[in-house]
Structures are given as structure tokens and as C-alpha cells.
Image 1 (cartoon, each protein chain N blue to C red):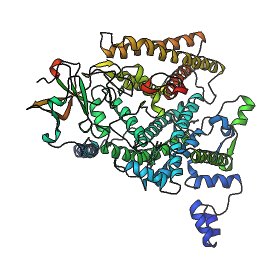
Image 2: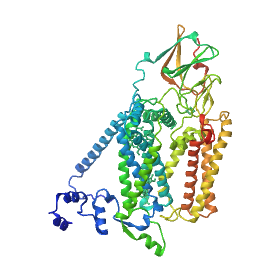
Image 3: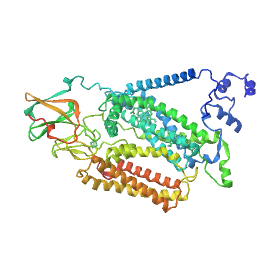
Image 4: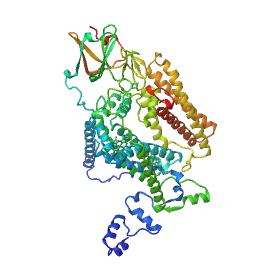
Length: 463
Length: 170
Ligand code: HEM
Ligand code: HEM
Ligand code: FES
């Protein structure tokens, strides 16, 4: 380094500026120089200088983590642009969004990019979570990064939820009314919680300003900090999990290649494709904007945004305390505990653990696809009829009893597949995860496409 | 974490430990203050539109005889319905569904308040006909002074079930 600097001290100002940025004078020519560039440049030093060739295969990670990063970056860029025009007050919010749409060149496109990136990022982050889970990349040195990832997921959901209110149209007003109303069912502190998040008894200017501050400052700062932590943990774990391979095959997969250009080129290509895709969608499908919020009239049906419809579907079947507290609470605890359970084998890097794991996963998915709709329809037909009649406390009839049945059913399923397949705990936990995830997906699909006016069950073409 | 190294021959252990405790106390105080500041910023504030004194919270609905028995009249500014039951009693019902807070419209032909959001239904007295709503519609206290009906909208009153005592009779 020293010798190099000495030798180049006579060079012109252009090359000195370049060197002060990236630390080397020339475009690197061989692997050693490329590795050094990676270590020295600020943005690249997050990345490994060399990495196992086996992790480069696209089907190993599908690049989902990188895609999340690209989408979050696009959200921040378009979001900051909109902040120059958007006005967070009930009287002016809707009007200012109309101004973004109609009064500003490319305003419609920028808002649509924000809208579609926000929706896609949820899908991509959840797929990333599934990738991490199914390749077993949450064990050992990666345990804690799973927790950081869950915090990132919480940030993404909060961003979407708080952003949803900002256009202040009928849809956003009532969706946020319903979602914050759910909080009032938290035992003990529910009423306080609901008032705190709304800044008053009803959705109004206080709510809008709270959501705006969260959406444009608090959550983005948290996101950036957590993402930096997340990437650092990936580095500390020695990069992403390496697919196992036996003997000669394994050697080949673990052979190291330099990051630059092998991984960087792939990442840039995938990122550009994703950006192009979002822009194409945003060009042809504008972000929706309904009529301004009217507190006097709820639209029918009043649905939460699509990613909360699974939760809203639960509300139709369980007592609210169970639907908004018990079930989500158990889910979050289970997700947090997942990396810290005792597993029989330390399998990492292989999709779905084993052939048996794959078969059990299919059984679990099919079970969920059959049982969940049956439960929904049965509860709709039978439950509704005698709910009002039962003399007992509604919390027991609509809350505790179905919850116990549900938990017993899940436990039974776990027992059955474990003994039927003589499976390891890893494989059984994976089957359980698939069962619950697919059940939640079915609930979400029901909420999106099978709920019509008055939240009655209908066919998608009747919605 | 490496185990902490205590110097065995520390000359004045009491002064050192005092400083450590004072330091910890100062940090805790700073954290508590920071939390206090944050909480006072995010605590619910009274909305600007909320009536400040008691007089603003009274909505004068009108003379008693303008409300025939069995009628439901909406007062959008006051966010309530003035109900006159068949027996002549008055009841002011909050228009907010007790399930998750949608605004319930009155369906005169079916004689129900039918919530558009999750199909809760309430009868003319606000009692639940159809869940998921867990309790009857909240109500406001009604007064009749010199034949003029007045509703105090400062605070919705929660109730477990419909009771005849909730109805204001002449
Ligand atoms: C993960 C990050 C983010 C997500 C998921 C997200 C999500 C959303 C959503 C769903 C909307 C509603 C837009 C619509 O469809 O009508 C919205 C609006 C908005 N967001 Fe974001 N956002 C993010 C980051 C940001 C950032 C970083 C800023 C600014 C610094 C920002 C500023 C805005 C503004 C001003 C609006 C109102 C304009 C409109 O409604 O179109 N957002 N956001
Ligand atoms: C904004 C959201 C997120 C971003 C930007 C992000 C980004 C990334 C990136 C770039 C990687 C490197 C490997 C890859 O691309 O798969 C990664 C790995 C990882 N992520 Fe995320 N992630 C996010 C959310 C999550 C979530 C929700 C979870 C799970 C709960 C999670 C858990 C992990 C774990 C455990 C790894 C290490 C995987 C391995 O070593 O193979 N992340 N993340
Ligand atoms: S808000 Fe009225 S039924 Fe849900």
C-alpha cells in the first residue's frame, strides 16, 4: 500500500481523487487486486472478498434478500420525493396526493413505484423468510440473524400499515379504523393502546401526524440500522449457508471465487431486472386513490389491506381477544423460538432437509389446503347459527373453546406425522411450519377473493 | 464477556463503588427522563375538534313532538342517532359499531342497524342481534327540558346489555 502510494504521488489530480475514493489507482486487473478493492471500498466492504462457488447458484437463495434491499431503497427514494409535496393533515392530505398524481410530471409514476414496491416488498421478504427457513439457514451462527430478520419484517409491516393511512381516502380511513380497533381487545391495556396509537378516540389529525412521523422517520431509520446489522451478521456467519455436497462434489461447491465480479455482476443484473419490472408495472397500473375519507359512511365491504386479511379472517371466526392477541402472540413467540429449539440433526444448506422432509411437507400443505376451507365454511354455517343462543360467556364459546380445539388439532397433526414417518424433530417442525403457513395463506386468499359485501362468503366473480 | 478484574489492593473501595453507583443512577435517571419526554410527546392529546367545555358537548335535538314513536333520526355532527321507542322513551345511540368501529347505518325497512364491515346487527334499542359485536351500541345521556330534547355527547356510555333504565322517559 505504502509503496504504491509513493510511486503514484506524482500522478494527476484525477487519479488522486479516484484513489482517495476507492484506495487503488487503477481498475483492478487480477483477483488479488479485486479482492483488495472489495475490502477497501466503503459500500463493498460489507461483502466478502471471496466466497464459495456453491452459494452463487441462483436457486440457492433466489437473490431474495438482495431484492428486498433493492425494493426498500426504491421506497426510500420515491418516498422522499413525495415528502416534498405531501401534506399530513386531514384537510390537505388527499388533495396533496391528487396533486402528486395530476400536478407533477412523473408524479403518478413515482407514487405508483412507491405503491407497487411497498406491496412487492412484503411478498419478497416473506419469500426470503421461507428460503432461509427451508434451507435451514437459521441455525448455529445464524440464529440471531433470524431474530434481526423478524425485526425487519415487523418494520416492513409497520411501514405498509402507516403508509396506508397517508392518502386519506375512504379505503385508508376505514382500513386503519378497523386495524386500530383490533387493539382495543388486548386485555387490560387495550383501550389505552387504541387511544395512544390514534392520538384520540377516533382517527383524525393526531392519528395522521403520528402515522406520518412513524412512516417517514422512525421506521426508515430503524430499517437502515437493522439492515446494516443484518448484513454484518451475514458476513460474520461467513456468508450465506453453503449447500452440502459429498466428496468431490462438496469440494467443488466449497471452492472459493472472488466476489468481484462473480457475485457483484449477478447482483447488479438481478437488481436491474427487478427495477425494470417494478417500473413496467407502475407505468401500466397506477396506485389507487379513492374518494376522500368520510367518517360518516363506512364502505361495504370495509377490508383491511390485503396483507392483513388473514388476520381479519381470524376475527370473523374467533373472539377478538383470541384473534388479535392469542393467535398472533403465539405465532410471534414460535417464530422467535424457532432457531433456538433443540434439533436432532444440524442440517443446513439443503432445501427441505431431506427427501422425507419434502414428502412430509407436501402432506402438510395438502392437509392445510383441505382443512382450512372446511373450518371456514363449517364455522360460517354452524357457528353463526348458535352463537347468539349459547348462554355461556362469549369469550369461552367463541374464543377459548375454538382455540383449544385448534391447538389440539395442531398437536395431533405433529404427533401423527412424526410417528407415521418416523421423522426427526427437524422434519416434523418443518411440516408443522408448512401446515400453519399454508393455513394462513388460505385465510388470506379467502379474505382477498372470497369475501363480499358484509364480509359474507362469496365466489371471486361475485365480489 | 471477560470476567471483570477487581484490583484487590484498591485504596478506597467505598469511593469507587460510590462513583459506580452514582454513575449507574445518573444513567438510569437519563433513561427515565428520555422515556418521559418520548411518552409525553406520543401520549394521546385531546383532539382539537373535541368540545372544550360542557356547553359545547350538548346537542339540542329539537322539540320532543318532532320525533314520532318508533322513529330513528340521524345527527351526523353529533355522531349519534336519536331513537324514540314505541313507548315514547328516548335513547341516543352512538353510531360507532362496538366491534371495530365502523359507522352503522339505520336500515328502516328491516328495522336494524346493520354494520357494513363484519355484518353485526343491532336492534332499535342498540342491542346485539348478530355478532361479532360483543356489546350493544354505546349511548349518550339524553335530557328533556321544557319539551326540548338535548343530548350530552361528551362521553359515550358503555353497557353490557340493554336495560330499561337507559331510556329517558318523559
Ligand atoms: C419499507 C419502506 C416503505 C413502505 C413499505 C412504504 C409503504 C407505503 C404505502 C403502502 C403507502 C401508501 C401509498 C398508496 O398506495 O397510496 C405509502 C405512502 C407514502 N410514503 Fe411510504 N413506504 C416506505 C417508505 C417510505 C419512506 C422512507 C418515505 C419518506 C421518507 C415514505 C413516504 C411516503 C409518503 C409521503 C406517502 C404518501 C403518498 C401516497 O400516499 O402515495 N415512505 N408508503
Ligand atoms: C428488509 C428485509 C430484509 C432484507 C433487506 C434482507 C436481506 C438479506 C440479504 C441480502 C441476505 C443475504 C443472503 C440472501 O440474499 O438470501 C440475507 C440473509 C439472511 N436473512 Fe435476510 N433480509 C430481510 C429480512 C429477513 C427476514 C424477515 C428474515 C427471517 C426472519 C431474515 C433472515 C435472514 C437470515 C437468517 C439470513 C442468513 C441466511 C444464510 O446465511 O443463508 N431476513 N438477508
Ligand atoms: S365493525 Fe361493525 S361488524 Fe366489525
